[in-house]
Length: 426
Ligand code: GAL
Image 1 (cartoon, protein in one colour):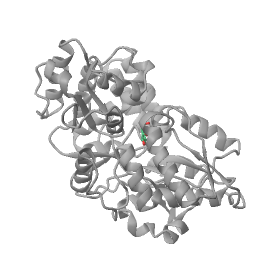
Image 2: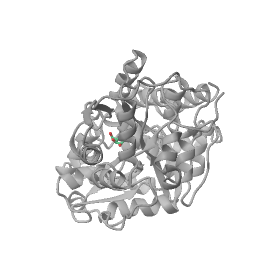
Image 3: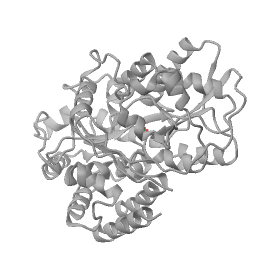
């Protein structure tokens, strides 16, 4: 039995997909104990590793008798980690806790009986009141809660290199009114001899696709793509795919060999004008000691309606975890006020908890906090909020075909529509 309802809320609410039912906790984890806690993530390098390090520092303060074991697997958005995790779970070799996204991505693990219910920890750590109720709903299924969020990220952000824009004759403070105006600016930038838009491998292209779909369709119609309310074969989607095609044509041609970090590095180096990436990118600009507003800028990709492209990292207690007590200790740290603040400051995200003081957060995060509180919320496709992994994988394959020239807009659109049909009826 599968729940497919969206919670179409705005103005501080959370539009998100319901989770699949019929999961089940297949037996308990190990019998507690042990001092090592293996934490599985894809935060292996650069600013993402710095984010993880901030959590680890807090964990060591909170639990000096436990030893953090880094089970990270490199590759943005879990591009390599998720397959590796699947193999381990299927082989009965789970880590003590692993990173997953709030939303339908969790449904896969729940359906496979790979996650323990952690709702007792929500009671014990007082989390039900600390997190927005919509977010808790997104993590809940049949009155069971399957993970604990560490933060909230935004997926639909355009990042700019100020000097590169100025050299191309573009006013770095002017925000394009819609996707067409944005394409015109990217064209202008590309004409100055840099990459107009830097991008990387398939998942970063899917990140761009979702941002274009959100901007062109608006929040409600975009959300309808995942609930059946919006026709994938419609004219609005055609326009968005044409915009996506135009933008891809303005990107670096070596994209398929690069990760998001390389694409962001191109901007840091001044060899690209723009990128569209989740707001973990801000942590890279900060690490490179670039100054917000002077050296780099940002704005949401928008068609007029302000939309927050939502995703949240969260941590789980896998069935059969060797050290479930250690995992619970990790979940305590990442959900604590101190843990949430330390992590988001290093990671570019905002705390999921509503009871922490964010007054001292940097300028970028202030914009995210404001947008999350006011704007329409749409779930990220590339980062597990909108669909189960299988649907995302099919869209990723179709997108890769398209961006490598193996299909045109109409073939791509047809394929996306067929994929939606097959998953909606699954
Ligand atoms: C997302 C994840 C973020 C960030 C990003 C790039 O899926 O939620 O925390 O790590 O991937 O790897």
